[in-house]
Image 1: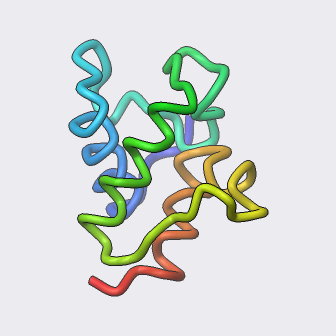
Image 2 (image 1 turned 180 degrees about the horizontal axis):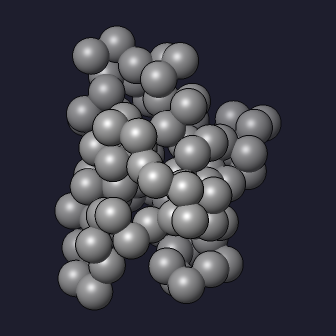
Length: 89
């Protein structure tokens, strides 16, 4: 398991908090593990919750109709990289 960068850890904390993942610690989220269809058990409603939390925290909106959402939400690493490219705060 690759170690999380500071940005990835910040995002993992945000996800655990937003989704109220009581049995998951942020540092347990493998940066390359699929966010959906994996042991995290996330679904499409969770994706909406994550997108809302990202909008509030990072100052830009993830659109539900974005053509690259499957790739953007594929892992903690991919989501963190996308945020770093588009964040305003």
